[in-house]
Length: 82
Image (tube, rainbow, N blue to C red; front, side, top):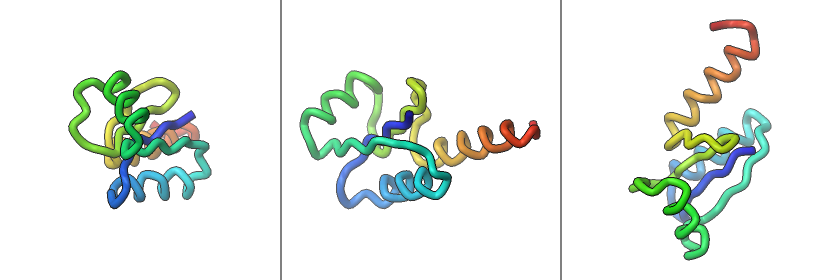
């Protein structure tokens, strides 16, 4: 499961959601505009300074570019490529 922490009017957050949808990855979006999710993000990724912050299967991936790289690495691995 993928969790994307983001906020409104964040183009990188929107791109992260679009990327997950393009690859048909199941995800949950949590807007840090909601104080509860902001507090949760601070507990999960204490040093986070920006959004999006993406968690995949309990692992902190990072932002959009890191997420795109992780997807590419996962797809290559799944295709038998290194």
